[in-house]
Length: 381
Ligand SMILES: Cc1ncc(COP(=O)(O)O)c(C=O)c1O
Image (cartoon, rainbow, N blue to C red; front, top):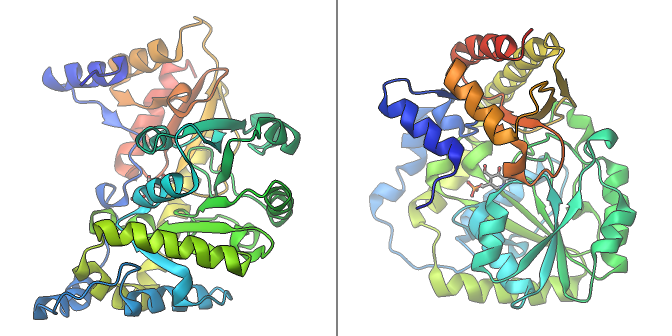
């Protein structure tokens, strides 16, 4: 496997006994956030009874009903028929790119963006076309630019809100405009909401699925929301015009039936995991809010950094000055060698211009505090 220069440097330092601290890990289970063990034992106790395996390609009804209940608490009325379980959101993207696109078709995707999409698109033999998020617009899009990207092979629009890595959360107005745009161009929307529980102004959060004129595939799962990435459970919710909804749900069901990837123990556990984790989720949310605030307060003191504060999610993207004019790779490697901390360069996320670093403010505060002091020193502040 070819390694990029940053990973090569990381491994070299590690082998030399100077393992850098990664400020890039948004996996909560590696950042000291743990779902309560006693609740896990309780939730999985039904699986221990060795329940007969009689798979439903859309996922067990009890698990889908538990998801309906979850959204009901947020004022959204869904039917279990609109839900299909997957073994994670990444798999859901693969299903949807494969379902909606033929070889060579394309999907509009925000740039900067979560790098995995490019790989998933390659496996599904489709292409990604960027719509750029503008830092000067608080990481919002420009719908005219988006319209210019649509061609006869465009098959859908991907939205991530809260967005990784900028932390942008799309407002009600922005969603309304996008839903109209999707309906006008007959383009389904794929809305990745894996960070939905982590909006720092919860009143701002809006979603595609409330717009009935457009087909919207809403993706979420328990890897971020319950800090259980290893349990591999995600879901797709299909909303919008009913005839199309049904067509897509039937096709997705057929795809899921081919592989039946979603393991039974986690499906049996899901109702308890969701229904009884309310207080954990509140604590988890407050912990993330706290970590974000501490990180932003320190970053604000570094004049060489310029940052649109993340409105949600676990990541931030900051612009930096580098009087030496190094490439992003050179700068990130110099930071790692000199200070022993590792961040991502903006170009990893297909950000086309300027110098940017990406980090996760979920990083354990014990590591984050000294790391941010080192970053400030490196930047000359
Ligand atoms: C924006 C976004 N979507 C999807 C995923 C993957 O989620 P899952 O673990 O459910 O595959 C991630 C993981 O970091 C992510 O950042």
